[in-house]
Length: 187
Image: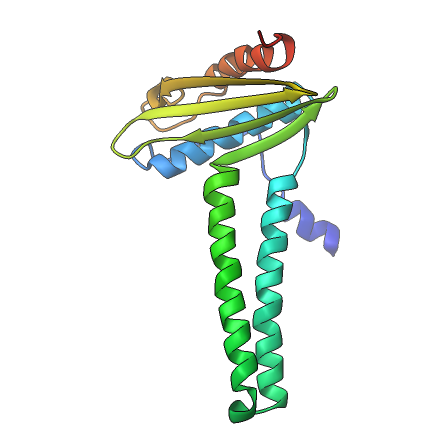
């Protein structure tokens, strides 16, 4: 039964990725997914999930405060639980604020983190408002050596007129990014 459910959830990679070409968020996410796929499958970069795990831990702590407040209110009805509800509510909103700060200042649009032969790599991307320019920032760190590479291209470079993401163009760009991040030494 579980095997049957898992087979229905499998993604067919042979189908082309088609996005609404006027929806910049869908285009950005499609290109990000294709870049992640190329890095993990073609170059065997092992994906790490450190920032996502940290985000999930922050969310879990916030939900624990919320859950404790609900449980305490259930066991000790409102007038008695007023102080605990207030403390837990303030804690929940404070931790949610910390989550937003984490996303804005630490993650900064990161969609891939990986490691290969001791070199850690982080990829982030953005498409500014009212612009068709896709900016990809690759950061690599090997010990004390840090390197950052920025590419800015028009999103039409990786899309055809029907909105299909062109994997060949992305692999070509990824090859130069991979070479820059993993082969070249910072000066």
